[in-house]
Each structure stands twice: as structure tokens, then as C-alpha cells.
Amino acid sequence: MYEYLNGTITLIKPDFIVVDVNGVGYKVFSPSPYAYQEGQKVRVFIEQIVRDTGVTLYGFQTEDDKGLFLKLLSVSGIGPKSALAIMAAEDSNSLAEAIEQGEVKFLTRFPGVGKKTASQIVLDLKGKLGDYVKKANKEALAEVTPELNDALLALLALGYTKKEVDRITPALIEEEKTTADQYIKKGLSLLLKK
Image (cartoon, rainbow, N blue to C red; front, side, top):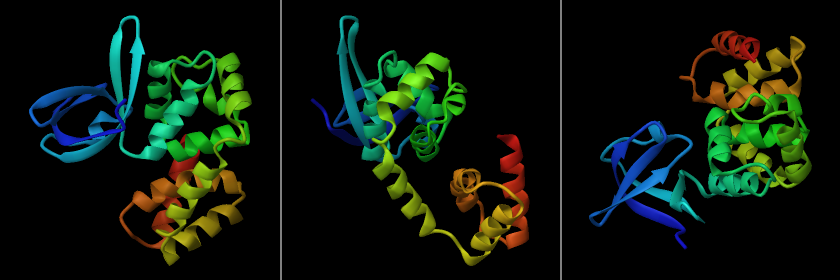
């Protein structure tokens, strides 16, 4: 029924936000409530889910994130809370890439996702998220500085796979612009965490 809400964030809790739209406060469950700030004017993309227990609103910063949530919901055994937990635990591009690559082991890291559910996610969604991954990669490449590009090439030369380097590239883009050497050090620390 709802596509999005335009309003002001009036409350932020660990699992939801309240969006005030013309004096009406909508409780919206979100994978990343702390991405918002109180008093911020926002557009939140909404998915309304009606169950026997009530009506619940789920909100996302982008239409793509909402689309990924809906795709996760289409998987047998994944409900709204599991889908939110999966999206909260990983950035959407890495998640979509892992599904496209069929990385069952990667998916079992998420809360409530065992090997069977992870296999089901791959089975149901592999081949359906390619456009999402390409779009995210294209946006990321537009922000790569010459220093960061040198650092990424150096990480590949050190023996890391393109997939591993691609996964940490968005985090490196978020870093303050610096030298290639500093990007390499940060990249290595991210790669060693995974």
C-alpha cells in the first residue's frame, strides 16, 4: 500500500525509527536505524507486511535495498525479521555479490541462517541479483581515486582475489582520501578481518 514516507525522524531505537509525517508518527523497522539522525528530513522506502498479529512497516534508505529485502522474503524460510538481520549484518552490495557467487559459507555468518537456509537463498536468488551488483560496482568505481586504484592493484599483486578486493573497495572509498600506502594498510587490515 505504501511506497515511501516523506517526513522527519523523531525517534531512533536499535531496531526501528519513528517517521513523523504531518503529525502522524510511523514506527518503521529498519536494518540500519542509526544511519538516520533525529530531526533529519528523509524519504524512507516502505514495505508494509500484514500478518495475523498485525501490520508492520519496514523501511529502507534506497529502492534497491527495499528490492533486496523483497527478494530475501521470497526465499522459503526467510521472514521479515531474518531478512532485516541479514541486511543489517552486511552492506547490500557484498550480500548480493555473495549470493551471485554462490558463497553458502559466507551466508551462514548471518543470524538465524544455517547451511540449509543459506543454500536455499543461493538456489532461489542466484542469477537474479546481477543488475544490483553491477549498479553498485559502477557507482563505486566512479569514486575510486588514482591512489586508491594503485592500492587495489597492489592488493591484487599481493595475491588477493578480485572478489576479495572488490568486497573491501566500498569500505576503502568511505575512508578519508589518503596515499596509496595508507590505503594498502587499511585494505590489508580489512582483508585479514574476514
